[in-house]
Length: 109
Image (tube, rainbow, N blue to C red; front, side, top):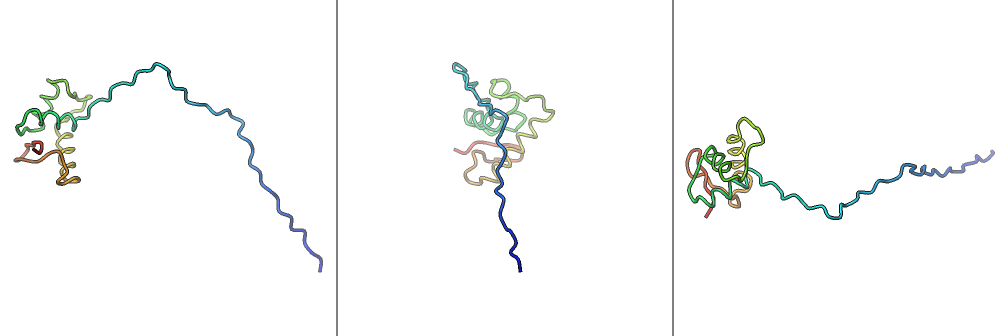
C-alpha cells in the first residue's frame, strides 16, 4: 500500500488593512456635571423636607427647587412612584425610602 501525503496547511489570517482610529482626548475639555436622576432628587428633597410626601408633591417641589424636571413625560409621578417602590422591594432594609402610608414616602432616619 502506498502512503498518503498528509501535509497540513498553515492558515494565516489576512492583515487588517483599515487603519485603527484612536480616540483622542480633548486637552482642555471640561466635564459636564452629571444630571441628577429623579429618584436621587427625591431622596435629597425628602431628606431636606423631613416630612412624608406623595410623588406628585415631590415632582412639583423638585421642579420648583430646580433639582430635576421631567424631560417631557406625561406621568413622571407614576414613574417616580415605581422607582421608589422598586428600590424598597429590591434593597429591603438598605433602601433610602420607607412607605409611611398609602401613597406617601419618607427617607429613613
